[in-house]
Image (cartoon, rainbow, N blue to C red):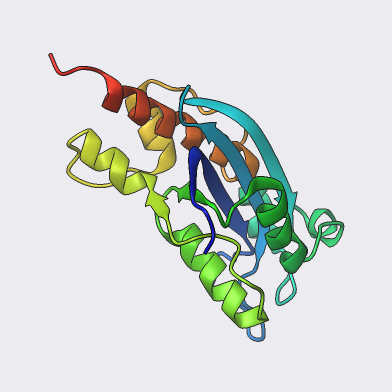
Length: 188
């Protein structure tokens, strides 16, 4: 049995190949970037971040995808294989031992689908936090906001480029840190 560590949360955001007019015949959306920010639980601070560029195996980067993410086909062609990225998550970040979080369920589902389709071991343990839902519940919102709307609601600037995994993971981790700090405040 794998020992679960509760010292840090891995905040993950993925970007994937996408199209403005639907998935072209013969292609399947592939993860092309995995952004990771390590959030220290004791201090509620972001202590590390990384952006893994992943070479797609079942699709190519469209002009729409480049416009959205800034990633080009040349960028991802120089990336690492998805299996290698998953192994890095385990070996460098201990992803199989730590709680991980993302903004919504898309990232979790993208990993589940791609791991199953390519026969790659799932790099995470069973503990996933949906920060989007948690944020809405903690703030009594009537619906779950997008990440940019949550940042505005929290009075936080968007740091970096929206729809870049490395930057989105950093911003989501900031929102998660705020939730941790708020949860620790004594009731008035």
